[in-house]
Length: 97
Image 1 (cartoon, rainbow, N blue to C red):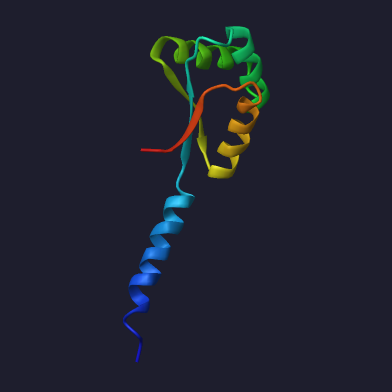
Image 2: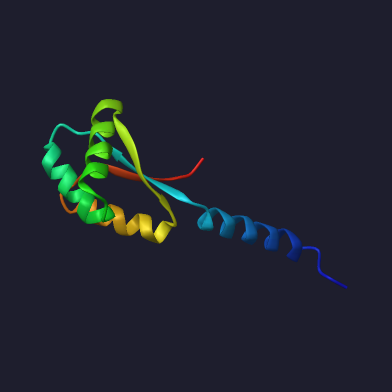
């Protein structure tokens, strides 16, 4: 006979695994410390994106206060934010809604 106490634990573990596996967003916030050029160069370095894309992200963060610059798995988000942290850009990793 199966022990009933194992079912909730298994269900909880599955929910935790799903939460970790879900896509995440990297959010870049505007600041008054870095120039556009500094932000654009670092975005290109972190995202391997075009100059035009980096400019769009930087401009959106400037105008709206933030920009979602990447959506994907947590490990990639952590890689991206570590590059942006090199010049102390203000970022956050959030779960995709």
